[in-house]
Amino acid sequence: MNELTMTFEQLRIFLAVAARSHVTQAASALNLTQSAVSSAIATLEAQHGVKLFDRIGRGIVLTEEGRLFLPVAQRVLTEAETARNALDDLAAEPRGTLRVFASQTVASYWLPPRLMALHARHAGLRIALTVGNSTQAAKAVSEGTADLGFVEGPLPESDLQHQVVARDELVLVMRDTRSMAGCESFSTDDYRAFTWVLRETGSGTRSESETHLSGMGLSVDQLDVALELPSNEAVLAAIAASDAVSLVSHRALRHSAFGHVRGHRITWTAPSLRPFAMITHPHRHRTRAASALITVISEMRGDAGSTSELPRS
Image 1 (cartoon, helix red, strand yellow):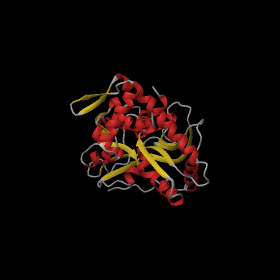
Image 2 (cartoon, rainbow, N blue to C red; image 1 turned 90 degrees about the vertical axis):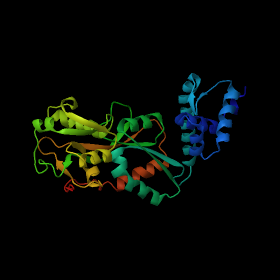
Image 3 (spheres, rainbow, N blue to C red; image 1 turned 180 degrees about the vertical axis):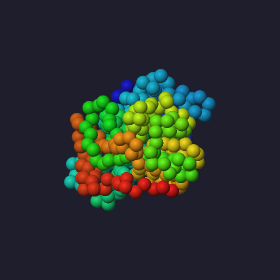
Image 4 (cartoon, rainbow, N blue to C red; image 1 turned 45 degrees about the vertical axis):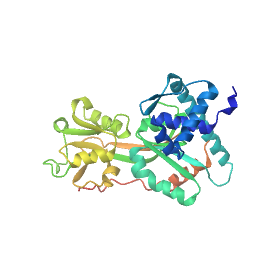
């Protein structure tokens, strides 16, 4: 058995099939023929005398050996990408791929202008943006699958470095036809009486919402929570269509396409302010591409996003 016969392309195909549990879908995603994908998997299995997949109906699932091999293959390709970026970084001009992982609010409302400014300066640089929640962003940077991460609110305990790059504020939102939409203050009893729609656990918005509730002497368990949703847009759509309330970023409300949703700045208790932070790994090489984005962010630092004018409809 020749250990050197394994290729990065075989690993890339293996991971694509494992992620989709379907050869045809993996082939489409990789822009390869189905036969090429099947052949690569068969060759990999034959070369190393191990079965990686079982066929069940029209699908394909990992065997126990395949499940054990999966994280190893992921690490190898991550390190290969790091090596490619290190070589690209030897050039004077930022090249290669900048891998960014951002939590949803940051990725949707704050980061895009900065990424476009980076593209305007370095058109040859590829930018790969992955969107998830703050916990997932920290994990990606920690594991080396992202060069830079951007999160909302405080980080969980970790060895990652973080730097505040902007500020955000949560606002209480409700449909503007509600009888209480004109109120300027809300009590603990009001909160208990409301029906709530919240972001999912693990998101920066959810974490900051829980901090705000704690300041009101409440917990999520004491609220009437109808839905927990994975995006700001989904939350605002639910609010626009019901008498429920929620806590969202003022940036999400400001850019919302859903009319008739009113935002209330929190003045009846301490304002729910939170940082947007950039996270980096202290022991990984910082590429020229990452440094170029950091420079853009520093130059655009004045665009923090004001809450002085909240959309009312």
